[in-house]
Amino acid sequence: MKAYLPSFFSFKQAQDLVRIGRKHDGGYLVSQSDIDQTQTLIGLGIKNDWSFEEDFSRQKKVSVVAYDASISEKYFFRKLIKSAFRVDNLKIFIYWLKVFVGYKKFFSQSSVSHIQKFVGLNSSSKLHCTLSDTLQTIDSKKIFLKIDIEGSEYRFLNEIVSNEDKFTGVVIEFHDCDIHLDKIKSFINNFKLNLVHIHANNNSPIRLDDGLPLVLELTFSKNAMTADDISLPHELDMPNNKKLSEYELLISD
Image (cartoon, rainbow, N blue to C red; front, side, top):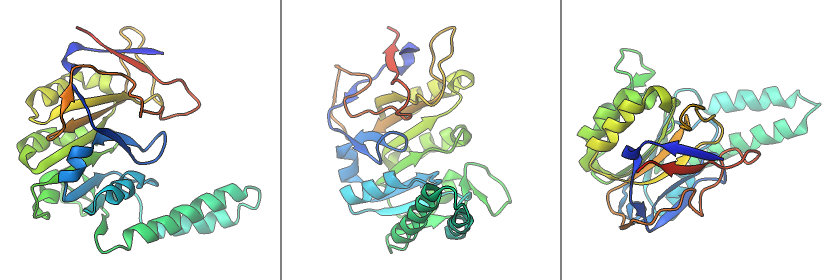
Protein backbone atom coordinates (compact mmCIF):
# COMPACT_ATOMS: atom_id res chain seq x y z
CA MET A 1 0.00 0.00 0.00
CA LYS A 2 1.33 3.44 -0.93
CA ALA A 3 1.61 6.32 1.54
CA TYR A 4 2.70 9.88 0.83
CA LEU A 5 4.79 12.45 2.69
CA PRO A 6 5.22 16.21 2.11
CA SER A 7 8.47 17.40 0.56
CA PHE A 8 9.99 18.59 3.86
CA PHE A 9 10.55 14.90 4.71
CA SER A 10 13.10 14.64 1.88
CA PHE A 11 16.35 13.16 3.15
CA LYS A 12 19.60 11.40 2.28
CA GLN A 13 19.73 7.81 3.49
CA ALA A 14 22.46 6.53 5.82
CA GLN A 15 24.69 4.00 4.09
CA ASP A 16 25.31 1.96 7.23
CA LEU A 17 21.82 1.33 8.57
CA VAL A 18 21.39 -1.65 10.89
CA ARG A 19 18.28 -2.99 12.55
CA ILE A 20 18.30 -2.74 16.34
CA GLY A 21 15.60 -4.42 18.41
CA ARG A 22 13.25 -7.26 17.71
CA LYS A 23 11.55 -8.13 14.45
CA HIS A 24 8.47 -6.12 13.53
CA ASP A 25 7.19 -3.70 16.21
CA GLY A 26 9.93 -2.54 18.58
CA GLY A 27 12.85 -2.56 16.14
CA TYR A 28 14.32 0.52 14.46
CA LEU A 29 16.92 1.24 11.79
CA VAL A 30 19.86 3.35 12.98
CA SER A 31 23.35 4.19 11.77
CA GLN A 32 26.15 1.85 12.85
CA SER A 33 28.45 4.90 12.96
CA ASP A 34 26.24 6.45 15.64
CA ILE A 35 26.24 3.25 17.67
CA ASP A 36 30.03 3.15 17.51
CA GLN A 37 30.29 6.72 18.85
CA THR A 38 27.72 6.30 21.65
CA GLN A 39 28.59 6.11 25.34
CA THR A 40 25.08 6.24 26.82
CA LEU A 41 21.70 5.13 25.49
CA ILE A 42 18.57 6.81 26.83
CA GLY A 43 15.37 4.91 26.08
CA LEU A 44 12.13 6.80 26.63
CA GLY A 45 9.26 4.34 26.73
CA ILE A 46 9.86 0.61 27.16
CA LYS A 47 6.54 -0.98 28.21
CA ASN A 48 6.94 -4.74 27.78
CA ASP A 49 9.70 -4.43 25.19
CA TRP A 50 13.31 -3.35 25.83
CA SER A 51 14.68 -5.29 22.86
CA PHE A 52 16.07 -2.08 21.32
CA GLU A 53 17.99 -1.21 24.47
CA GLU A 54 19.17 -4.79 24.89
CA ASP A 55 20.26 -5.20 21.28
CA PHE A 56 21.99 -1.79 21.23
CA SER A 57 24.04 -2.73 24.30
CA ARG A 58 25.08 -5.98 22.58
CA GLN A 59 26.34 -4.00 19.61
CA LYS A 60 28.29 -1.56 21.79
CA LYS A 61 29.08 -1.66 25.50
CA VAL A 62 27.20 1.43 26.69
CA SER A 63 25.35 2.62 29.76
CA VAL A 64 21.59 2.26 29.36
CA VAL A 65 19.04 4.44 31.12
CA ALA A 66 15.38 3.62 30.44
CA TYR A 67 12.49 5.84 31.52
CA ASP A 68 8.94 4.55 31.93
CA ALA A 69 6.68 5.03 34.95
CA SER A 70 4.02 2.63 33.69
CA ILE A 71 5.94 -0.56 34.49
CA SER A 72 8.17 -2.06 37.18
CA GLU A 73 9.33 -5.43 38.47
CA LYS A 74 6.29 -5.53 40.76
CA TYR A 75 4.01 -4.75 37.82
CA PHE A 76 5.36 -7.67 35.80
CA PHE A 77 5.24 -9.97 38.82
CA ARG A 78 1.55 -9.17 39.36
CA LYS A 79 0.88 -9.88 35.68
CA LEU A 80 2.67 -13.20 36.05
CA ILE A 81 0.72 -14.22 39.16
CA LYS A 82 -2.58 -13.18 37.60
CA SER A 83 -1.82 -15.16 34.45
CA ALA A 84 -1.04 -18.26 36.53
CA PHE A 85 -4.77 -18.53 37.24
CA ARG A 86 -5.59 -18.47 33.52
CA VAL A 87 -5.61 -22.25 33.20
CA ASP A 88 -7.45 -21.82 29.91
CA ASN A 89 -4.42 -20.20 28.24
CA LEU A 90 -0.92 -21.41 29.04
CA LYS A 91 0.55 -19.06 26.42
CA ILE A 92 -0.36 -16.00 28.52
CA PHE A 93 1.48 -17.40 31.54
CA ILE A 94 4.54 -18.29 29.46
CA TYR A 95 4.55 -14.80 27.92
CA TRP A 96 4.52 -12.98 31.27
CA LEU A 97 7.07 -15.42 32.68
CA LYS A 98 9.45 -14.52 29.85
CA VAL A 99 8.80 -10.81 30.34
CA PHE A 100 9.36 -10.97 34.10
CA VAL A 101 12.56 -13.02 33.84
CA GLY A 102 13.82 -10.90 30.96
CA TYR A 103 13.22 -7.68 32.87
CA LYS A 104 15.07 -8.93 35.96
CA LYS A 105 17.98 -10.21 33.88
CA PHE A 106 18.49 -7.07 31.79
CA PHE A 107 17.85 -4.38 34.39
CA SER A 108 19.88 -6.08 37.11
CA GLN A 109 23.08 -5.26 35.22
CA SER A 110 25.24 -2.55 36.77
CA SER A 111 25.34 -0.58 33.51
CA VAL A 112 21.56 -0.64 33.03
CA SER A 113 18.93 1.27 34.99
CA HIS A 114 15.18 1.79 34.85
CA ILE A 115 13.87 5.14 36.10
CA GLN A 116 10.16 5.03 36.93
CA LYS A 117 9.31 8.42 35.48
CA PHE A 118 7.58 9.79 32.40
CA VAL A 119 9.75 12.24 30.46
CA GLY A 120 8.31 15.38 28.90
CA LEU A 121 6.15 17.20 31.42
CA ASN A 122 7.50 19.89 33.73
CA SER A 123 5.46 18.99 36.80
CA SER A 124 5.75 18.75 40.58
CA SER A 125 4.64 15.13 40.29
CA LYS A 126 7.33 12.63 41.24
CA LEU A 127 6.31 10.56 38.22
CA HIS A 128 7.33 13.23 35.71
CA CYS A 129 10.52 14.99 34.64
CA THR A 130 11.79 17.00 31.68
CA LEU A 131 14.30 15.86 29.10
CA SER A 132 16.72 18.42 30.48
CA ASP A 133 16.39 16.77 33.90
CA THR A 134 17.43 13.44 32.42
CA LEU A 135 20.40 14.92 30.53
CA GLN A 136 21.72 16.62 33.67
CA THR A 137 22.19 13.21 35.27
CA ILE A 138 24.49 12.01 32.46
CA ASP A 139 28.09 13.13 32.15
CA SER A 140 28.43 12.50 28.43
CA LYS A 141 28.04 14.28 25.13
CA LYS A 142 27.77 11.02 23.21
CA ILE A 143 24.17 10.03 23.89
CA PHE A 144 21.83 8.05 21.65
CA LEU A 145 18.17 8.88 22.28
CA LYS A 146 15.26 6.52 21.53
CA ILE A 147 11.74 7.91 21.95
CA ASP A 148 8.48 5.94 21.81
CA ILE A 149 6.11 7.61 24.26
CA GLU A 150 2.74 7.64 22.48
CA GLY A 151 2.44 11.36 21.68
CA SER A 152 4.33 12.98 24.55
CA GLU A 153 7.34 13.45 22.23
CA TYR A 154 5.88 16.78 21.11
CA ARG A 155 6.29 18.19 24.61
CA PHE A 156 10.08 18.41 24.38
CA LEU A 157 11.15 18.67 20.74
CA ASN A 158 12.62 22.10 21.50
CA GLU A 159 14.71 20.57 24.29
CA ILE A 160 16.10 18.02 21.85
CA VAL A 161 17.16 20.83 19.51
CA SER A 162 18.69 22.90 22.30
CA ASN A 163 20.76 19.88 23.42
CA GLU A 164 21.59 18.58 19.93
CA ASP A 165 25.36 18.66 20.53
CA LYS A 166 24.97 15.89 23.11
CA PHE A 167 23.41 13.35 20.72
CA THR A 168 25.10 10.86 18.42
CA GLY A 169 21.74 9.83 17.02
CA VAL A 170 18.03 10.00 17.71
CA VAL A 171 15.15 7.74 16.69
CA ILE A 172 11.64 9.06 17.35
CA GLU A 173 8.24 7.51 16.78
CA PHE A 174 5.94 10.42 15.91
CA HIS A 175 2.27 9.80 16.66
CA ASP A 176 -0.84 11.56 15.28
CA CYS A 177 1.20 13.07 12.46
CA ASP A 178 -1.89 14.51 10.81
CA ILE A 179 -2.43 17.04 13.60
CA HIS A 180 1.25 17.69 14.33
CA LEU A 181 2.75 18.15 10.86
CA ASP A 182 3.84 21.74 11.55
CA LYS A 183 5.70 20.66 14.70
CA ILE A 184 7.43 17.81 12.86
CA LYS A 185 8.40 20.14 10.00
CA SER A 186 9.84 22.70 12.41
CA PHE A 187 11.81 20.01 14.22
CA ILE A 188 13.32 18.57 11.04
CA ASN A 189 14.28 22.04 9.81
CA ASN A 190 15.83 23.15 13.12
CA PHE A 191 17.54 19.96 14.29
CA LYS A 192 21.23 19.81 13.34
CA LEU A 193 21.38 16.02 13.07
CA ASN A 194 20.54 14.64 9.63
CA LEU A 195 17.34 12.79 8.89
CA VAL A 196 18.64 9.48 7.47
CA HIS A 197 15.67 7.10 7.48
CA ILE A 198 11.87 7.05 7.63
CA HIS A 199 9.53 4.14 8.26
CA ALA A 200 5.73 4.21 8.50
CA ASN A 201 4.09 2.18 11.26
CA ASN A 202 1.41 0.04 9.60
CA ASN A 203 -0.42 -0.47 12.89
CA SER A 204 -1.89 2.99 12.26
CA PRO A 205 -4.03 4.02 9.29
CA ILE A 206 -3.32 6.32 6.36
CA ARG A 207 -5.28 9.56 5.98
CA LEU A 208 -7.50 9.09 2.96
CA ASP A 209 -7.42 12.58 1.45
CA ASP A 210 -3.63 12.83 1.02
CA GLY A 211 -2.22 9.39 1.92
CA LEU A 212 -0.41 10.60 5.03
CA PRO A 213 0.53 7.80 7.50
CA LEU A 214 -0.44 8.73 11.07
CA VAL A 215 2.61 7.20 12.80
CA LEU A 216 6.17 7.63 11.52
CA GLU A 217 9.53 6.38 12.79
CA LEU A 218 12.26 8.89 12.02
CA THR A 219 15.99 8.27 12.44
CA PHE A 220 18.47 11.15 12.81
CA SER A 221 22.26 10.82 12.67
CA LYS A 222 25.34 12.87 13.47
CA ASN A 223 27.96 10.51 12.05
CA ALA A 224 26.50 8.54 9.14
CA MET A 225 27.73 8.80 5.57
CA THR A 226 24.69 9.37 3.39
CA ALA A 227 23.65 8.81 -0.21
CA ASP A 228 20.99 10.37 -2.43
CA ASP A 229 19.58 7.00 -3.44
CA ILE A 230 16.91 5.93 -0.98
CA SER A 231 14.69 2.89 -0.77
CA LEU A 232 11.48 2.94 1.24
CA PRO A 233 10.84 0.60 2.81
CA HIS A 234 14.51 -0.23 3.34
CA GLU A 235 15.51 -3.88 2.91
CA LEU A 236 15.96 -4.12 6.71
CA ASP A 237 12.56 -2.61 7.49
CA MET A 238 9.76 -4.85 8.68
CA PRO A 239 6.04 -4.12 9.02
CA ASN A 240 5.18 -3.33 12.64
CA ASN A 241 2.17 -5.56 12.24
CA LYS A 242 3.27 -8.66 10.35
CA LYS A 243 -0.36 -9.49 9.53
CA LEU A 244 -0.76 -6.29 7.51
CA SER A 245 0.94 -5.06 4.35
CA GLU A 246 3.96 -2.78 4.66
CA TYR A 247 3.51 0.86 3.58
CA GLU A 248 5.48 2.02 0.55
CA LEU A 249 6.50 5.62 1.30
CA LEU A 250 6.66 8.23 -1.45
CA ILE A 251 7.94 11.76 -0.79
CA SER A 252 6.70 14.73 -2.80
CA ASP A 253 9.23 16.66 -4.90
